Image (cartoon, rainbow, N blue to C red; front, side, top):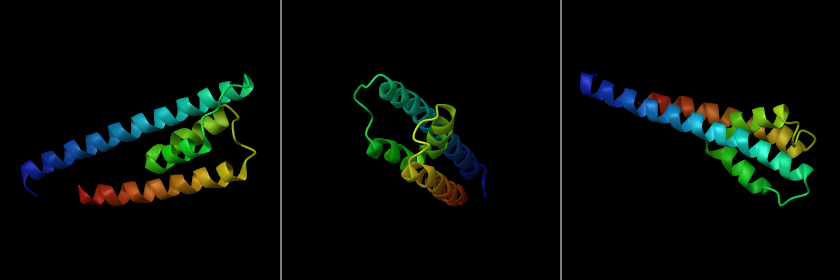
Length: 100
């Protein structure tokens, strides 16, 4: 591996890490927002949106938000679905990492 491809790989890795950090922060915050809306009987964030965030890499943030805010923890779809998506996210990230 030459120095240029090594630099390119490091740059791509930084972009991936930044993306994952942002999408997981978004996932965490969106769980907080949905919990507050639920308590106030306001319009809720669709479950499809929550699972979309999980699917595109934000499953850790959603999972942490679920248990921090005690939100969606009685729904089997979330209790089993979010950790499953987290495992899939990890597998995909590890395989993408090998491409760099």
